[in-house]
Length: 223
Ligand SMILES: O=C(O)c1cccc(C(=O)CC[C@H]2O[C@@H](n3cnc4c(=O)[nH]cnc43)[C@H](O)[C@@H]2O)c1
Image (cartoon, rainbow, N blue to C red):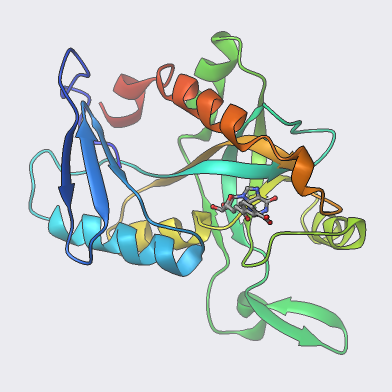
């Protein structure tokens, strides 16, 4: 989560504490980083906890960001690149029907999509800093894609998808409950497609993510 940009990074040491429920939270400059775990439910629970605790704080949060590593759809988002969501979509929240997958919005009882108003300034800043950055839909899935067929099915339903991960929609749901804008910002550790665990570059992607956070336009994002 991002607070007002008047809280500069400066030389401030990170401050760590545990939220109710045991979620570790590290505050550094304008950033509060909550480690939420894997999957949309864990992400929603941790984010909702942090937002509820900060509800009466000043400055309050201005933006919730789902961050981590992601699978990138080729050729748009190769390993090592950055993906910024302009839209977060819950890609497997729905039902299988005789006519194929129907999401919960089509079924008439929920939403599966959030827009990310901060996507453009973030992508611009990262590109200006020399980081290959793809902007588009980031899918939230509960199962990592492991076949070319599943990757093609997802792209068929979401032609604007640049990546998949497992937490964005959970963060978006929690942020929405607090009327807070959401962003999803990740670095690509693997290609979405046939399972090839040996090809994942998790360490490199996490190093790239740390470098990305040094280049964000904080003042533009939270004023
Ligand atoms: O399958 C394995 O052996 C394995 C080993 C380490 C980590 C995993 C994960 O599934 C990590 C999921 C974690 O990372 C994000 N992520 C990264 N790439 C993808 C992807 O292609 N599809 C979905 N999620 C991905 C995700 O957001 C989780 O936080 C597996």
